[in-house]
Image 1 (cartoon, helix red, strand yellow):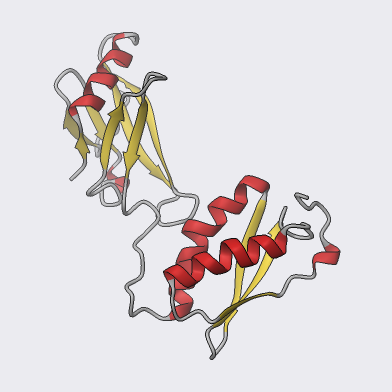
Image 2: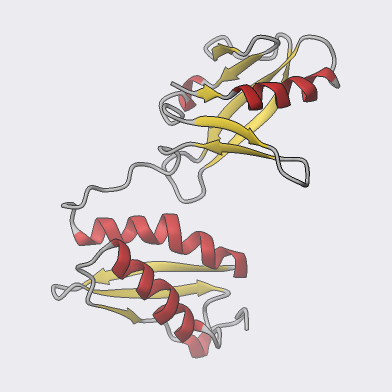
Length: 191
């Protein structure tokens, strides 16, 4: 079940007061179960919701949830937190990027999860990406860098202080992280 806090309802109510009468909101998930998963919240004029949307009564408006997104948003919470700058809307959806593998899942699966949900979103800010090449029998993780990370002068720091540290915290079985990238062939490094 999706929860909309009273603070979020009030915030949406004020926004909707500035829209034409009978305007509601519609929520859907884009690319569910992937590292690029995101929540899309849009205005929904009367009659523009889909027949199979699930409607949540929020007193002064209805929040329509796309049918295909309902399972992914199960357990999600929409909140508005006031602060000195006005406030911040937060949509917390634990199942948005898929489910974290259990602690007894294969190392390869858990490493892939960490790369997609923690590492790649961080290096994406520099136009980079990190791909898993292999997990050896000794639990060494072999990675290949791409995008802005390919040929970057800071890749060793990123590898040892960022990626390896994070992987070892999340997947304790990881022994070492190895870079298999030919950085000399990088065409557009960040640094």
